[in-house]
Length: 310
Image 1: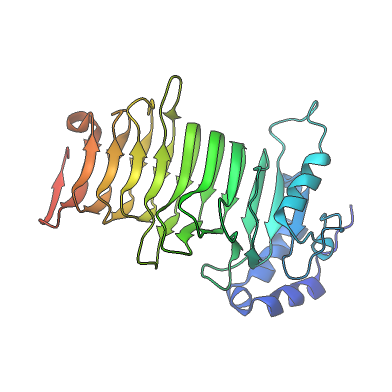
Image 2 (image 1 turned 90 degrees about the horizontal axis):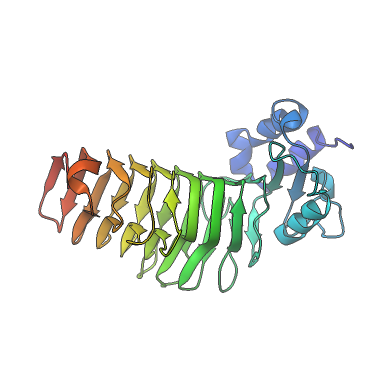
């Protein structure tokens, strides 16, 4: 394998993103490439919206693809799925830039990692002109340090089925005054959603943080929603009554000014240590007397209270 990350590539990366240079991201890539994570991934793929080319193979930083879709296609074609070991993982690294793509597939058993800094000009940002950022099935998918933005009402991530996946350190926002949803899923097990921001600077804010749909054999099972900051208008976390939320833990989140902060109509989740300000009901839960513990809430701006059930 041609390993080409070196001081020249680090200087190029730092020139592209001075904020990343100040934060030591070039040194972080040295660690990823030359030690640390190199042996942990079967293959690392590279995408550079500004300097890449989809005719490149994407297997090194100086042969980066230009689009995420091309990297996902190349990565999937590179794998013999009949012999694939699910313990193995790949990684797709995104240079800072705006990726105006409607992605129709998540990469399975693969991490997608943004190399930028949080913000509108320094992040690895997936921001199509209209529509959904990514739609499909998440299976062993990791999304890290990405900015995901939509100009359309509806979901940013439209996840039909989600299994054994992680979303961490990402920002979800609407680029227009539309009521969008960060994550909308039909059937979800073992999702880890941690340290993300759902936010809006528009006159119409985000509608939902996470929306779990219901139906026969539909789940929000063993989901972890931890330490997020969710600003929205309708509900921070919404679980339909026919969605089985067994072993779902919602903890240590800041949820600000929706109509309802946590709206669990199934009553399967355990909610503890959340800070919520809601215009109507901070926590609506079918089993609030036993499964909502030490949440600090403000209901309809009537003052704070800390309670063992809400």
